[in-house]
Amino acid sequence: MALPFFYIDDIAAGDIVLDEDTSKHITQVLRMKVGEQLLLTNGRGIKASAEIINDQRKKCEVKILETETELQLSPKIAIAISLIKNNSRFEWFLEKATEIGVNEIIPLICERTEKEKFRHERLQQILISAMLQSQQCWLPVLHQPTLFEEVVIQSNKNGQLQQEFHYEQKYIAHCLPEQKQQLAAFSTKQSSIILIGPEGDFSLQEINIALQHKFQPVALGNTRLRTETAGMVAAALLRNV
Image (cartoon, rainbow, N blue to C red):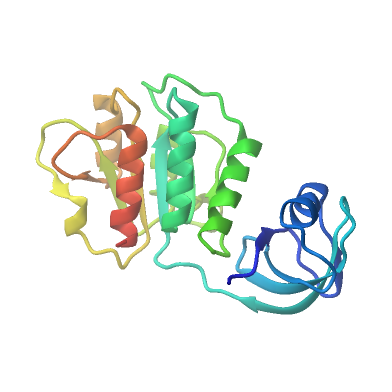
């Protein structure tokens, strides 16, 4: 049986006192006791095996036994996706994208984005839960909401200070009836970013801006998808799941 898996931001050698929520889950929900073992990750590739040395309800303490480093999934994949009105659907996308192994998620603010409210702390917790559930050690980078043009323009710049969204392959999935290749037809061996629009799709101006900055127009299948479904399908195709 797999050991219970928990997230902690800082894993250091020696003894660690876990936060109250994690401590309660270990001692009250799982009813673990002194001497039992568990796994920890910092979401940045470190996995540690640990042993409980103090099963206090609010301040469970563990001793690090061994640490290892897991490589990040490659190639690097970013999904730049519009915020949507329905919070639960956007949260579902975050969960599935994390399980699939997306490296970076950029919430987009587009011309037709209808909702811009963004609860970063809550959404970060959804990513953490999905990372642990899927037994991964790398937490996707979740950006603050970013203007569409900022992402597109930055993707085409050079220099360390301007490469936040720089990828080798760049795609835009839109619904206009123009000639597009299926995303599944492209090689998935290079780092990639794909733009996913809001419920009303990207505006013609946004599409033209993306094309001017060398984004390749793509289709995600033969049916029209909701924003969150399109994001999940794009993640699966780019990760070659």
